[in-house]
Amino acid sequence: MNVASVPFPGLTGDDLSGRLAAPPRLRRGGVDLLASLVLHGGLLALMLLVAIAPPLPVPEPPAIQTEVISQRDFDLLRGVTAAPAPAPAAEPELPPPAAPSAPHPRSGGARAQPDMVRPSRMLSEQALANPRSRGLRRALAGLAEEERIAQLCDLEAMEQIHAWRDEFQPDRLVDYALSDTRMEGQTLVAPRGAFRSRHQWYEVSFQCELDAGWRKVAGFAFHVGEPIPREEWAADNLAAVH
Image (cartoon, rainbow, N blue to C red; front, side, top):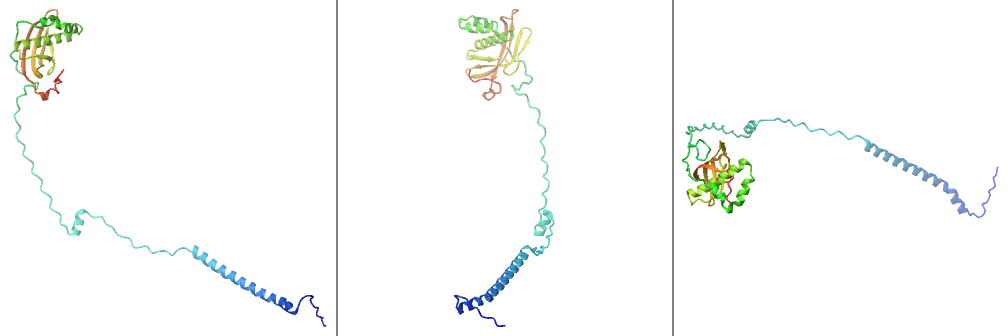
């Protein structure tokens, strides 16, 4: 059967041949694209396999054996010979015990009874009668009995010391400076007091007897001792001034 060729209006022969030849080129391009995708997919799969594959185990180095040795063994390994231990030092000979020394005059030990000065005339009453002692009389009147007796006897002691030797000018007296005072009947006993004269402290001891009314000094005896070293004043609470 013969098929009549139908002309395409408006198309030349070249145009028609070009349009008819296009399909084979399109088919080859699709094949190339598919091959490229397969190739890239394979490379990506290989990279993933490499990334997730576990690392090859690294062989561990052999363990180091250690041993603790003493200092002596270490010195022997180094070729060092230990020095011999020093011989124990001989104990020093102790000197024989010294004989007990005599007690210091101010150490508070047993003391011989000193020679006491025993004046026949009491001086505290006369001193208090002086108009310049008005303030002292008022002060004594305001004291408790025990303190008033002590102050009255201290005044008698300072007056008697100055009357005994006028080079002494007592301006302060502490009857309990080196030892406590005590009462024996109506007598105040100060075994180791101290008085200050011309900025120097001296030891003093006295016995002050009071009358029946405890208002006046009825009898007195005293002894002036050695000067007290200045370095001992602070320990005995003896003020340099005031």
